[in-house]
Length: 130
Image 1: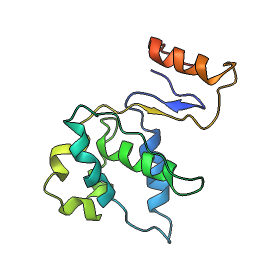
Image 2: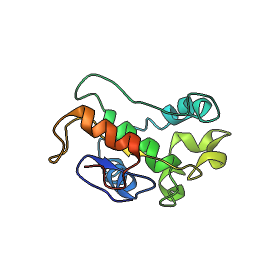
Image 3: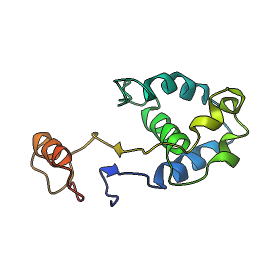
Image 4: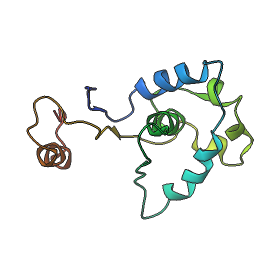
């Protein structure tokens, strides 16, 4: 599946690259233990995780962190091995072991006329959503 301006689809390396840039910042604060809060949802009926928060409060960073940790696209053990999440018992069992679909709903793609059309394309499983 491809990547576009609106979403990074199944197992892409983009979340890893974006999160890697964040962790190299001199003011980076390790919030990787938040990943441990998401793990119980993986085996439940609510396997879909939607990250919502007010504007400018770190949703994209958290989504990229989760996708880089769980996703199969790239081995992220070197990056996450130095953070707090590495001390959790579930660390190695879930690191890079899941398929991740990442969709950004913050704006409508150029060739979609409405959010409804965008959602219909996602539900239809289109390889190129918009």
